[in-house]
Image (tube, rainbow, N blue to C red):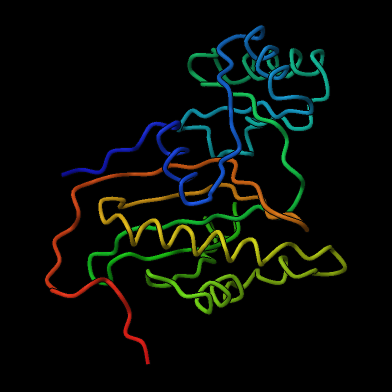
Length: 230
């Protein structure tokens, strides 16, 4: 009865069937493995921890970005393990760098009263500390997706705030609709978290994903899970 997470590979496969591509990561249990992973993925790469207690702690320096060659990768590996712990504790991985953009979070979960809910916010303090997150019921329409990304207080950062380049909000809206469709198709999917989703001026990159499964929650209605159309 308690939700259990899919493995990373299974989550990536399920999401991929809905056109949601998660940028691959390769395990780096040692510096030589990290170098081999980078050679396979291609430089520049990121080196980061996936340990639950460190995953969302950028203040601890648990992520190193734009590592251009083997020398930089080995140095960063040594610095991370010296500062934060042994490789097996850090669960280090190597990932190809994504184009720069705005870091966002896309989630779906089951609310006991409302049912499936789609959520969106910016990654980091905006959503975690200030609660700047918007929600819509599943299934979401294209209008819902457009309103969702525009209804958070930090939305101007997506649309060229103070001269910055606007990001690809059309790609972001499509991602929201795909997550909504997946959850609507599979009631046993009780939680999805895509974090971060880096939205660039052209396209986006999903860097991390978790999917949780549980027996479908009991429903007291007899009709399909759809909003009425007018």
